[in-house]
Length: 181
Image (cartoon, rainbow, N blue to C red; front, side):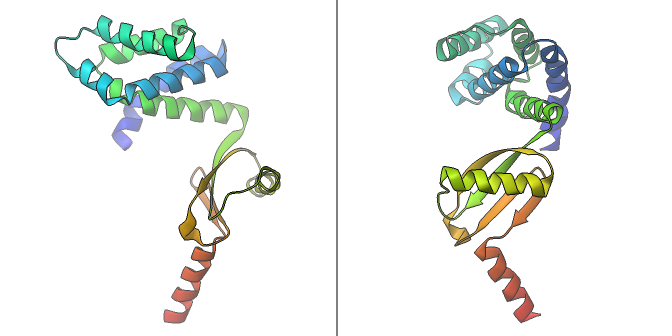
């Protein structure tokens, strides 16, 4: 959704500018926690209730973060939350967290990689795959594995907008196209 991304960008950039001066990891963890809470349907229902004040929504969210993470929010995260609530942008928090995460990755020269595999990958094999992918993409990767049995075999790697597909399913599709052309 381009509109959501457009709404989230200024908030994510402002949080990033403040977090760079402090603890980026803590800010990232707090942004993720706020995004997870904001995605909760019960909280959204409460926040959308006209009888609920902005202060009540803020208090509920900060208490949930405190109870689940056993730490209170930093001032930067509190300010972000207040601003988002005051501007009726609570639903944008997940996108703000995603864009903030992208900014942190860009600063550290790291990219997220999703490795789709037909079968589970052992940790030693995963380390080898990630090492070869880092050479291929010429950057450090944070890899996560998603099991997708319909690939039949091989892997499909998505890094940002780049896709490397060496799955059996993709090869069969290529053969099908070549035979029917």
